[in-house]
Image (tube, rainbow, N blue to C red; front, side, top):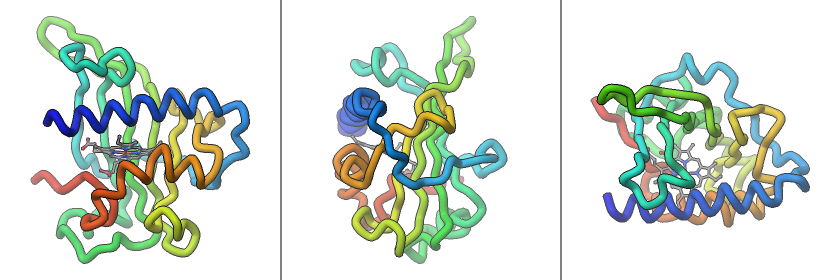
Length: 169
Ligand code: HEC
């Protein structure tokens, strides 16, 4: 768990870094995940104020996968995931109300889109994150940033086709 949090810290720095360069965004070509609310919910994670990184990445993370990748996720393979698979991390604010964590406004949407031919240098996945979940605000400008800001941290997951999530029955 400690390790996972340490990695998320890197993700925070990443988002801040990308925020700084977003003005130069030329639009690294990864499609916005329309309809993600209708996809399968893979898992969720809440980063609370007890976490040292709450200030930057506090939020409710809701991981989804589209229909294309669902069978592979459920069976744990065969890998790699088929082209057309999309994983999306739908990040929301939350509040603690009478002992319950309540979902709030959207903070960001991060995705991984599988297309082996289109994204050969990043494990066959296209990486993108939209600030505020706004389709007009992609923060990853090009493949170089996709590598340093996203792929580098997903690389240790190579055995699992660069994804962290597994099916939780
Ligand atoms: C510092 C490490 C780190 C960086 C950098 C990082 N991620 Fe991740 N990512 C993770 C971890 C850990 C998970 C698993 C989260 C969970 O289980 O809830 C994850 C999960 C995901 C998922 C869900 C699929 C999966 O692998 O389980 C997507 C989509 C995703 N990240 C996209 C991105 C994008 C886009 C970027 C760059 C903007 C990025 N990530 C940068 C660590 C990172």
